[in-house]
Image 1: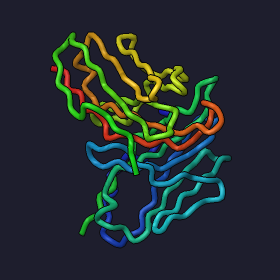
Image 2 (image 1 turned 90 degrees about the horizontal axis):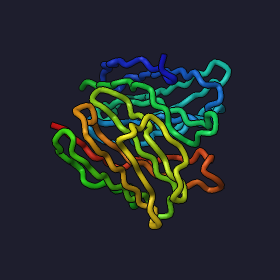
Image 3 (image 1 turned 90 degrees about the vertical axis):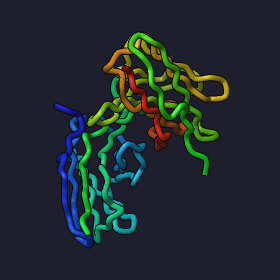
Image 4 (image 1 turned 45 degrees about the vertical axis):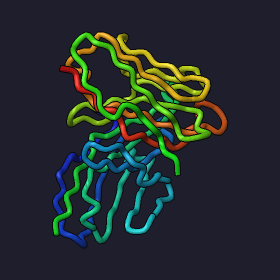
Length: 113
Length: 117
């Protein structure tokens, strides 16, 4: 079982739709949480950090539930340019290890015109 | 703003050859991480360095080694290359304000695409 699990999709949605991605993580010692976006054959780019109180950045809203070890990302008013793979990422200190990122398998989003 | 620089961007090698990948972190970043992403896979952590010392080790084969230099750039050395080493290799950097255990944001370079024939 992977440490970070996501629905791989693909999610095919029309422009303007609202889409939600979910993610669960297994290590309760995890300390920081992120959503990264990765376009085909490109590097992962930080979309947003995720905080317990929830945070919003324009059309994007992220939520963290530590008790359930669950992370979500909501995208409103989808644009064609939102088409990408969305990676749920967890960062923590494990048995002396430092700061490595653990990636989910990613959820592919395809926004259709 | 300056980003993480990786070179070369593409590399083709034969089996059993060696390869060296270079990473130049964002200016003032003191921590460098290496990740390997195979086809259709998520990035897997290989190794990291903080202030020129190895800070963590992941699923890095014994055939691979890495180091961070005094100017904070890092090199990943890969020997006895195998077909399965074909992947995208990303370097990421961060600024650890206090110690290497900080959880500061990592920024990724464009990657080196290694193809082993």
